[in-house]
Image (cartoon, rainbow, N blue to C red; front, top):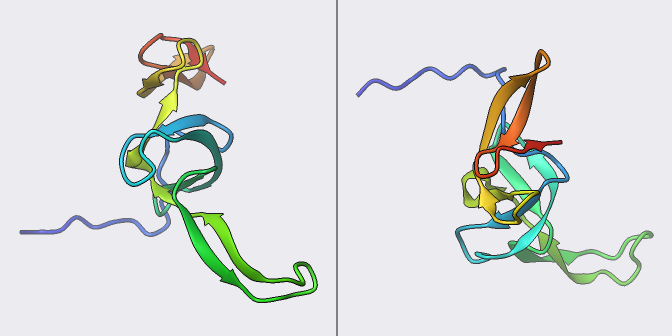
Amino acid sequence: MKQKKVKKNRIPKLNLKKGDQVVVIAGASKGTKGQILEVFPIKRRVVVEDANTVKKHVKPTQESPTGGIVDKAAPIHISNVMLIDPKSGEPTKVGRKLVDGKLQRYSKKSGEIIS
């Protein structure tokens, strides 16, 4: 079977952005709602607040003199989260359409434009 060649410099377009409200639909944090804190487009992962938390051992530094074990949000694959529809509050798929010459994201469930 022949493998596809992947362009190294191409950054994929994602339907989710930093600040979007999402719900986790798969994994250990399933059902958790939260805001996207960080997006990694090349790895296709996002960091959602209060979801997929891991324990990290932190050395004492000048910023945190105590150190110790800290809970930290770890990245989740983008396929395991869904955007929350701003109108109905339910999980929805995201589409793209031209509005006034600009490509805009919209909710497929309600048809409302997502800012």
